[in-house]
Amino acid sequence: MASDNGKTIAFQGAEGAYSDLACRTVHPDYTTMPCLSFDDVFAAVTEGRATLGMIAIENSIAGRVADVHHLLPHGQLHVVGEHYQPVVHHLLALPGTKLGDIKTAHSHVHALAQCRKFLRKHNIRPVIKGDTAGAASVLTDMNDKSASVIASELAGKIYGLESLAADIADERGNTTRFFIISREAKTPPPGNGPVITSIIFRVRSVPAALYKALGGFASNGINITKLESYLIDGRFTAAQFYIDFEGHPEDKPVRLALEELGFFASEIRLLGVYPAHKFRSEHP
Image (cartoon, rainbow, N blue to C red; front, side):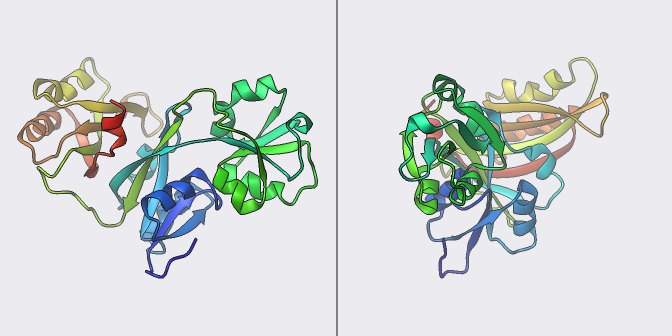
């Protein structure tokens, strides 16, 4: 997909991937840039080859996707937005193929995991590939009507495949959350609608360390929407925490909560302050 405004948005995967679909949905006027890995997306944005990056970070069925706790803290990039992309998996095959002919389904490990029941029901063996759209592009070069891929409808259109079944995920409402990253921070002003703040911090591995660090959020009525922990530096003596919470750092309750966090945590890193996606209010 190309545009004439000089702006490019990078994503992990091949053309037609769900990340590509997210890019086209959020920024239809941008050129999309396929990348082999999340590291390549970060490099493209850092080096100025892409204006923005679209990073899948979690899925409502499969859980965490990208390890943002590893990628974001070591770069100079900022989270400037979030996007919730509905994921509608299609079983795609070569033209003229029947569902009963299919023996294997090729796709990304997360897509396969999200369609376990469908695959088991139809006795289709999952085959792990690097990404959904990449698997679709390979299938077009194969003369094998026993093979299929799980990918988006967009991938089917791009690579000339037919959809044998639509919306085949085990659970309804399959949705992937994305971060939009940029070299420049784009913090919205306070009082201009609901915002989400994302930070990373560290605490010592001592009793009640996390309880004390987060106490200010509870006492100031700040809603933490996501909390994840990770061991760091290959040791078991310290942990790093990633949190999303509702509110702007300049709001008084948030400011007080962050001040209290500073007493008990170290290496606090602001990843980004960005408008809350409408999905949050539509699916409380």
